[in-house]
Length: 517
Ligand code: G6Q
Image 1 (tube, helix red, strand yellow):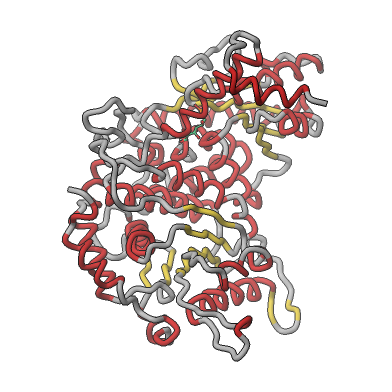
Image 2: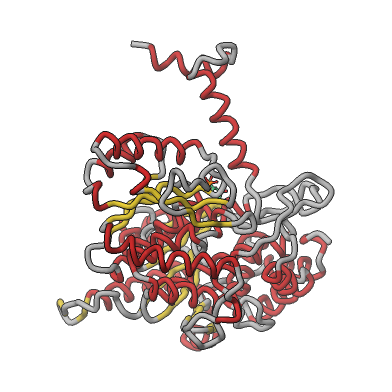
C-alpha cells in the first residue's frame, strides 16, 4: 500500500492545516513533557510543531506501514534491498550483523558468535594490529564515498581517544592535490596504507592506490610491505601478492552503512585501539536493539516520524543537522550521504513513480560556528529549515576555564538552547528588519559526552532513522543507481582522454576548453 493512501496520512494532513503555534504555546510545561529518552540519550522535541495527537497519529502511520516489522526483517536478513519485478541489487541489508556480538549489558564479545563471518574479521584485525601497531605510526585510508565519509567523521569525532603517536589520514578525491598533500607530509617508512573499495573497481580509489605505490617505490620502499586492502572476497583487490592482508566486507553491507564493518574498523582500531573499537560497536549494537522496540522510546523511529511530519505534512524540503560539538564537524557530511543517497528516490519498491516527497536536502556544520554563517537565513529567510541539534553536557578533554562567570562548555550549551528557543518562539519588534516570525521547528538530541560508545549509538541512530523513513515511504533505501551512473559516465569520458573514442562530440567539446589559451 502506498504511503499517501494510509488512513493516518489523511488525518495527519488535516492536523497539518493548523499546526500548533509555538510562538504562543512553548512553555516550561511543554519543554518538560515533550521529551523521550533511551540509552543515555534524551530527545527534546518541545520546539517541533507537534501535539500529542500528532505524535499518536504518526505512530499509527508507522504501524500501518509495518515499520518495526520491516526493521526486524532487515536485521533478520530478509532481502530488503530490492525492487519487485525489476532488476535490482536484490540483497540482504546486514550492517547490524557487523556489531551483533554483545549481550545487552555485557561489553565482552559473545563467544557463541565465533562462527560469524564478521567476528572472524575482528579476530583477524586484532592479530594483524598486534604486529602493525609496532611498525607503523600512521594509517592512510584510500577510499571514497561510503569508504571514506563515515570513517573520516568517526576518526575526527574521537581523535581525543587516539593512542600515543597514532595518526590517521584520508585520500579520497582523484584530485592529485588530495593525495600529494598527504604523501608529502608523512613519514612513509612509518605508514600503513589501506585501500578500501567494496567493489575493488572504483576509479578514484584505484588511481590513488597507484599514486601511493609509485610514491613508495620512488622512495625505495616495497609497496607490498605498506599496503593492506579492505574489499569484497575475490574482488580484484583480494590479492595476497599485492597486500600485507585483505580484510573482507560483503555485498549485504552498503557503502554508506559500512562504518562498523572493516571499512571503518581497521583505521579506528589502529588509531584508538581494539577496546575503543569494541565500545563503538557496542553502542551501535545497543541502538540496533532500541530500533526494534515497539514503543515511543524507539529513538530512531521517533526521529524518523518527526522528519516525515516536517517533510510530507508541513512540506519543508531541507533538514539542517547542527552538532554543538567541534569534533563532529565532519559528521553532517557523512549524514548527508547516508540520508540523501538512501532516500533520494522517486519510485517505490514496486518500481512505480510516487506522488509524495521523499528524503530532504541535508546539510550542516558545527555550532556555534554555524550561528555566524548560515543561521541568518534559518532565522529570517523565506524557506523554513527544520533543524536537528546534537548536544553534549560535557566536553571531551575536560579542560575548561571560567570567563565572566561561565565555562566555555556552558557557553556552548547556552547557545544551543537559546537558538532552539529563538527559532521556535521568534521575536516581535517595531522594526520589520528585527522581526523573527518563529515557528521554525527543531529538536535536540542530548547526551553526556561524545565518547566511543555514544558515537556508535549516534551512528546507528541515524542509520535506522533513514531506514525507517524508507520503510514508511515504501522506497528502497539501500541501492544507489544515481551514484552508479556517475561511475559509468566517468569511464566513458575517460575513453576520450585515452583517445579510444574521438567521436564522443559532447565530451570533446568540454575537453577543448583545456587546450584553449
Ligand atoms: C555508498 C555508495 C558509494 C560507494 C563509493 C565507493 O553507499 O555506494 O558512495 O561507497 O562509490 O565504492 P567502493 O567501496 O566500491 O569503491
